[in-house]
Length: 300
Image 1 (spheres, one colour):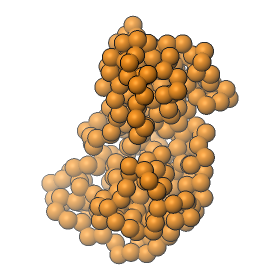
Image 2 (cartoon, rainbow, N blue to C red):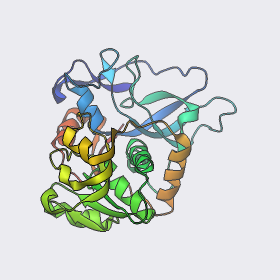
Image 3 (cartoon, one colour):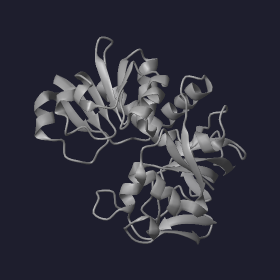
Image 4 (cartoon, rainbow, N blue to C red):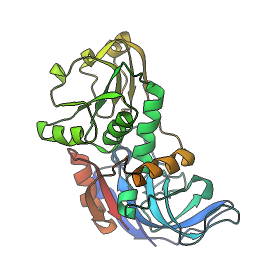
């Protein structure tokens, strides 16, 4: 099978297309033909030298999202050959990951793919959807409070805006450029801002893009959750009743529910650009440049 692996830490040029044997599922695992995956910021960070995200061994296949078709599944797992599935499938210590044509995945971590979208689009849901959902749960924003989502046009930020709006939370989106403001409003934000200086103050902030240089955005006694690996500055900690990093957890039950929201028309999945696996280096360069409304998807 074809894989896209990093052979060293460095720029996009360290990504290599190779051939390896198809994995043999272990006890409790399903074999999934991977139709699509994505490139997330964590993948770019993992590829780079000197970041906290490091792989167990090289070469290593990266990627956290899978959408595909079940080939084989354990008896009694509830899955059958031909089922369309999605999963959050981070890189494993043995060098396997999501950017490969077949993946052996614990059957308990699979969820049904949304029926209303193709698998390329469905691949944008697992990591971004669970990250946004779990961060919002931790922030526990009340009806009278204001929430700010930074990087609101991106994959995780856009999910958070939609999920918060669906719960009736008054949500503002912070974006990097004025032309992205209408797209964030269309996702359900009450307001959109490209200038952090004039955005106001907020009871809670879900930070997907970095606002540490603008601590005034957080009200005294407010709460902040960030996906950044950077140390939370003292200026933010002093203002906050709580400020912490968010590390996503597997939750196939909730992933199934999020897929249901997609089919109900309550959660929109957005592919900003898509590339075949053979163009993984180019896809990484595009993802690293940022500034997109949605995610970079890979077809396998």
